[in-house]
Image (cartoon, rainbow, N blue to C red; front, top):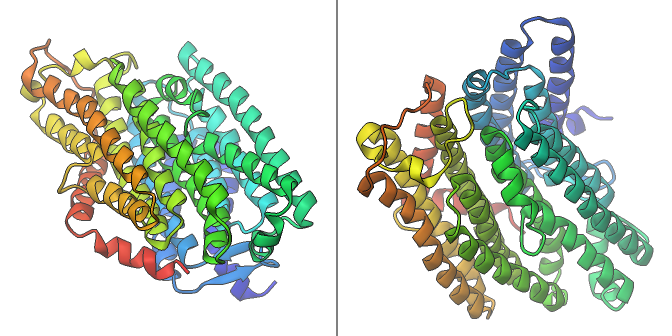
Length: 475
């Protein structure tokens, strides 16, 4: 193996090494919690900066199965930064619930390794292994605080439904291999037009899409989302709803964008994805209105946002794919901030998540009320925040692809969603409630909240700074 190849996959090697080191520390050190926390931060800071420094070096490695540089490094950057922000806030949260253990950081790093592999993979078998690596760690993280019954319930539901979805994905890969005689995505793309003449290949493609749809939380494969987000530790929900969704969409983009750029018949796939997008947007937004639990509301919101992003995939053009990646970046900052604010209000009980608990928050904690308002405005897609341009680019891609009806339904869904987002703001500023006591917030929590807020505002004011970089690396 050449040194150049090792440097190409250095982010993967770094995370793998970090996992091994943190496991050894957990086994032999009595201070594993603190050591693993700082090791995780240092490693993630390295991958954040290295992914940008090496972004122009685009290569295919290991017989065209692993990609490095370009769009892969962009995903490395988004995933690393999201995981870094979550980990920085995790220690205060875990100490608060009296469940701070070193294995938490091992699980997060191991899940991140799976996400990295999903973004880099150019082979369906490797994609499946990467997805399972991420998912297995998420199953454990969902039930990390096993003293609370809802954590155990969330973990079990996620595991059972996740295993069911993995069956669809694996069977789809088997059918694709049976018809294409390969699992290499690049080779499949080159012969896509001929393969579409085979019914077995189309069936395999549909099953593959079902498996990915479960991971991105789109309707009708969304049933696990509200229960898992509500039952999991809040900081874990932040990671699953952002980095997990980004990784799943990275695999979707790799699997289908190559087909589009090869000028193949994309209509069959586009129609299926359009149906998933419409169902996700409408069901996610309408159902969120009925939620009084803010974690469940954010869960259904996540389903609706998956629908918006699927519009860009269905459009199948360059602006659509770049819009999806831009959307994923902004959404990661918005949701990390939202869940951290929710975790602070929960205190150590993990019960204060009702909408009524936010009544009068502007009087007792104006700083946190203002931050939550910015996050809610951004999630609803109001300018001048990054969420506005996230939706704008995917809607624009639909119009340019002659799928204007998707953009229209997306706008209607956004109008519906504005109700439940702005309702949180109304409760904080215009409703009287009992004196709300926030949990002790560390400087780390405040740092993460400020970073997320600045990115949300900056990407709303100068979206081209990120969009131009994304477009530059899309073929």
